[in-house]
Structures are given as structure tokens and as C-alpha cells.
Length: 191
Image (cartoon, rainbow, N blue to C red):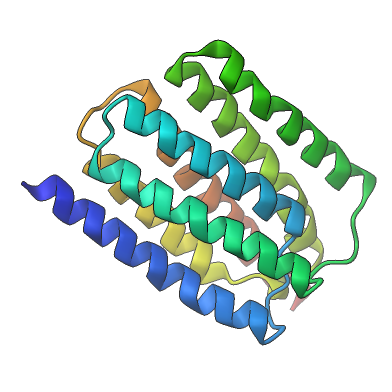
């Protein structure tokens, strides 16, 4: 009974985090890295499908909503030309992430799909970490804090606990937390 409520809270937190983030992009205050968002949107949507296959339930729906919104952010980042500096390391992260995506299809196993796509999503943080390290005030810190909390709620909302359903949201929660701590640390140094 409480799983759908946690799923609804997770979806609410998703919108709560994304709406100000998107507004900030439109206003030119936040400059997301388009490569990261293409990777995140693509991999998150595929993880959603894998979680559905393993009966993730209400927790999986949060991931699906997040995937769709992430694709929108990628489009917005591209249209706004939010980050015109794309380095060789950015291309490396992007190529590694994108070449990993077809591997999930070859495995025909939701667990391996989630393992590969979680790896892809973590690789997607590469360009964002690099950019935020250099420009720590151009990222919305609260967005990543909310996403860390949201992913922990996703884990609680899952209707079936397995590595297939838990790995992605748990890993992303940890990476969001690490990213947030790095941005706070860099803001103190740069300020």
C-alpha cells in the first residue's frame, strides 16, 4: 500500500528538482553539459524498461518519468548551446557511454542491462564533473541533492528488490551525493 505513495513522492520530487533546474537553464544561469544529459536520458529510459521487466513497480515509474525529463533537458541544453566547450575527455566519456548502450540488447538479461546502463550513467557524469569542477557556480547544487534523496525513495518504493531494480537508483544516489560534495568543496575554494 505504501509503495505507490513512495512512488508518487518520488515523481513529485522529480518535478520539484527538475522544474527550477529547467527554469535556470532557460534563464541562462545553469549551463548543463549536453553530452551528460543525452547519456542520462537514454540510459535512464532503458533502465526503466529493464526495471519493468523485473517487476520494479512504483519505483520504476519514477525512473521512467526522470528519463523522459532528462531527454528534454538534453534537447534544451543543445538548443541553448549551454556548453560550447567540448573536450577530448568529454568525447571519450560520450563514446564509451554510447557504445555501451547496444550491449544491453545483446545480453537479453535485465540484470546485465542495468549493470551496463548504470556504468553508462556514471560515465555520463564525467563531463558534468569536469565542467562543475571548473565552474562550480554554474550548476544547481540543490538539484543533485534532491536527486540523491529521490533515488533513495525510489529504492524504498520498489515492489521487487533485486540487483536489477536496486543497482541503478542506489548508485545514482551515491554519485549525486559525491557530485554535490565536490561542488560545495569547489565553491569554497573558488569563492
